[in-house]
Image 1 (tube, rainbow, N blue to C red):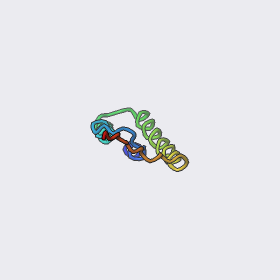
Image 2: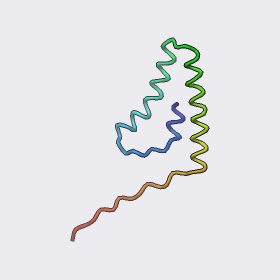
Image 3: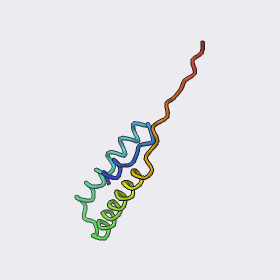
Image 4: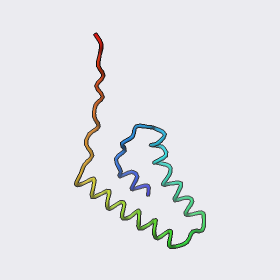
Length: 77
């Protein structure tokens, strides 16, 4: 989950949202290691993460993200 979030291009500039996207996969991994969950759920999450990594890798190679647009501010004379 963490690798998928690192591979995904960040489109928002909100620092709170960026921090949540960094912490959430680590927190979820910790919860799944500590709490007893069914093996089916663990296999589903593992499969979903592996497919997500492959999909994001393919998209990053075939459709690279455009460079961020520069903000032009009008100067009043």
